[in-house]
Every structure is written in C-alpha cells, then in structure tokens.
Length: 200
Ligand code: 6PG
Image 1 (cartoon, rainbow, N blue to C red):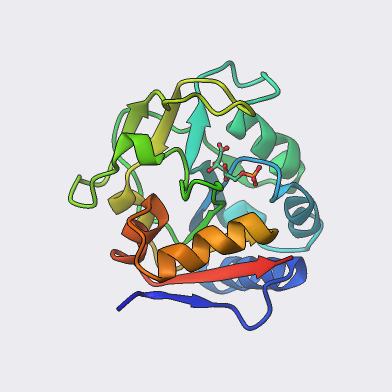
Image 2: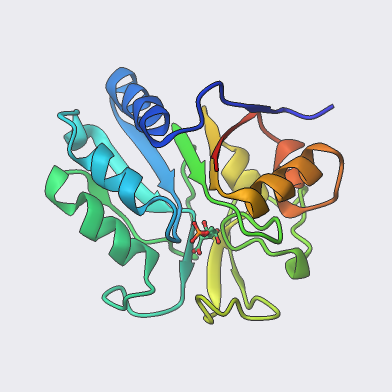
C-alpha cells in the first residue's frame, strides 16, 4: 500500500496553483523547494503571482556544497527566483532545528533519488528529522558536488508533499517505485502522502 497518487493534472499550471493555494491559506508557511532544472520555469510563474510572500519562508530540500553565488547552488537559484517577492529565503544548515514544512516540493532523479538522498546512500526511513551531509557515489555529472540534504523524515514532516517530474524516464522510475521498487522516493512514500505531478 503506497501513500502516493497521481495528480489529475500534472502540468506546470497545476503545480503553481497547488503551491499558491498552500501559501494563500496558511498564513506563515515554510516551503521546501527543489533544486535542478525542472522547477525553474514553474518557479518563475509562481513568483509572478500576488501572494502573501511576506509570510513565506523558503528553504531548499538539499544543497550542493558550493558558495551560495555558485551557479550550482540551490539556495542561490531560489534567491534568483524568489528574492524579489519578499519571501524569506534560508540556506540549508546542518545545525538544527529543522522546521515542519507547510509544503514540500521535490524533484526526482532517473535513479529514484529525491533531494540528495541517492540510492547509494541507502537513506534510512527511521533516521530522525534533520539535515545530513552526503557525498553521492557516483557524483552526479550534472552537479558533481558533495551535498547536504534533509532526511526522509524531515521531508515527510510536512502538511503537503509533492513530486514534480517530467519525461518518460522519470515516469518509469515513479512507476517502478509505485510497483514496489526499493528506491529513495519509494521510502518517502512509506512516510508521507505524496502527490505526483507528471507530464511528458
Ligand atoms: C538537486 C535536486 C535533485 C533534483 C533532481 C531532479 O539538488 O539536484 O534537488 O533532487 O530535484 O535531481 O533534477 P532535474 O529537475 O534537473 O531533473
């Protein structure tokens, strides 16, 4: 039995509407947002909306260990996308506390990783809420850096959790996870109710 389900509409506008609704209704809210390329255009659409951004705190779900002004920095990308909205954007720190999130938005790798919880790290679903340092093995060619990442429990410690994925390869890995493959994303399914936003 998995806690994951496909969104009726997996498109960018549906993702924007889902996040905007969470911001609109919750008052102060902390969002956990992903790195990578998939979200960039969706971030731009979301940041253009009139929302109570002054009540919003944004954190990356994981971070590449590079300077924040490095092109590979996730908090740098979040500052570029949302800095003008007035939201508070916080880097991912190894020191506690880790908040409960109003909303967690994750990407997924073709290997089934979420955040920087790669299969080689064998992410532990029983590990406590926190941020851990990991060195992916192998280093992902698109971002060959040591990482910091929220644990599975930290990602699951949220009112809403979504995964946004695009393309056939990511559909296949999500289908595999839903069919029982022991992938990091499947381990998250065991901890939280996750809505999957996919389109080709
Ligand atoms: C990162 C991410 C990572 C990303 C997936 C998907 O820091 O790279 O947080 O988990 O979301 O690798 O990345 P794409 O959207 O670029 O395919």
